[in-house]
Length: 313
Image (cartoon, rainbow, N blue to C red):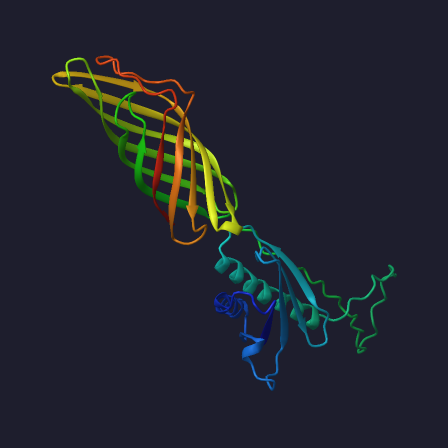
């Protein structure tokens, strides 16, 4: 039996069973249990102390002691992108590893200083039993290999509004994005698509343009979190292919372009499978597209506001 004591006492108790399960699975024999859940009469073969540092649970010291041996210590560091469940599971596996190391050291006979070279003894007389020199046992400790950080995938869907043509109604529509990155790294790659419609402006013959805005592109950026506000944010530079078409009665016009824009998004809450997102996309530089038939132009400051929901996988 290996008993585990967790400090501080207000550490998230809902993750402790995952730590105990990982520890028990990592032991060749026996099992692990929380110290507070075992009786005083329980005879533990090893005792583990898990000391979390800081309220973000990014640093932890694991100490394991066996009867008659010295304590074995291992320090672990995590990032804010590592899920709490994964951190506690890693701690459980580390406890099992240190229990095995402590047992190997306890079972090994004490090592002797290397003897000075001596001449090879002559063969023993017939019938005499040769002496058996003591053998020193070397214990090699292999640290667990670091596994690569898993990929994080986020998909978002929402609505958008933004300026269309000058002296016209704003465009309104839908947007969809997908973001891929490593949980331990801030860098992200994203794909983006949107569709919107707008009405106006009025032209000389009394009609109004009916326009459609179709965009698709990719972007590179970074993401981070403000834990005090439970808010996650991202910023990315996007290269878009945009097709704009406009109808005025039987007259039609269209324009294709490759604009660059900056997209900023904030998501709440910072963790969990689902979050609400709000942000804006601003075109860089502030030049405008135009429709060749109606000579409609975008305003100088071109962009859109975006709001929706994101699913984190």
